[in-house]
Length: 330
Image (cartoon, rainbow, N blue to C red):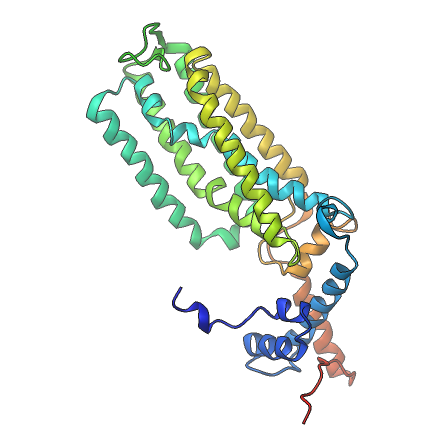
C-alpha cells in the first residue's frame, strides 16, 4: 500500500481518458527505457488504440455484457467462480470436521487433523506463484477439476462400500450418519488431504486470476463484481446444502460433487480460451467471433510479439512506423 502512490498510471486507462501524451510516455518508460519509437512500444500502442476504438463503439449499460460476443466473457468470468464453489472444495474446508468424523476421528485428533488441512491449503496455494504463467490457466482448471473429481469419487466410494450406518449420528451429530474405520478410514483422510492440495494448486487461485483476465478495460470493474457475486451466491447456497446433504444422502454427496467437477472440466475445455501471457488486446480477440477455438489456444504465442517483429521489419525496410501523440504547446 505504501508503494501505490509511486506507481505509474495505466497507459491503457490514460489513453481511454484522452491523456495520449502521458500514456505513450509511460508505455515507453515501461517497455523501452523511454524510447517512444521502439518496436515494442509502437506495436503495443497500435493494439491499445485499436481496441479502445472498438470499445467506444460498444453498447452502453448492462447490455454490453451480453451483446457482440461479450456474453462469452460474462459466461467465463461468472462460471469459473461458480465452479470454484461447485467443485466441493468447501466440503473439505468448512466441513472437514464432519468428513473426518466419518473417518472415525474424534476430539482433539479431529481438530488437529482439520488444522493440517488448512495448513496444506496455505502452503500449496503459495506454490502456484512459481509455475502458473508457464503452465497456463486452462490446464490447471481442467486437470485440477478432474483430479478433484477422482478424490470425490474415491471418498464417496469408500464411504459407500465400507461405511457403517450410525442413525443416531457420530458423537450425536445427526449430520454425520456414516463411519468407517481401519484402512478405509485412512484412505478417506488421505484423499481428503489430496483433494485440498489439488484445489490449492488449481481452482482456488486460478479461478480468481482467470475471472480478472477475461474482461476488457471498460468492463473489468463491474465484470469482476459479477464474478464475485457468482462465487458468493454459490458459497452461500452450498453452506446451506452440505450439512443436510450429509444427513440425508450421506456418501452420495461426494459423488454429486465429483460429477460437478467433471462438468467443470468439460466447460473449461470447450469455452475457456487460454489467457496466460496475453495482452488485453489479445484477450479481446480470443473472445471475439473471429477468435480461435478455446482448445487451440496456448500460453504465450503472443500476437504482440508478432506485431513487434512486423514493426521491426518495416523499419528495416525504411517504412515509418512510430507513435503519434500531440506535442506540448508552448
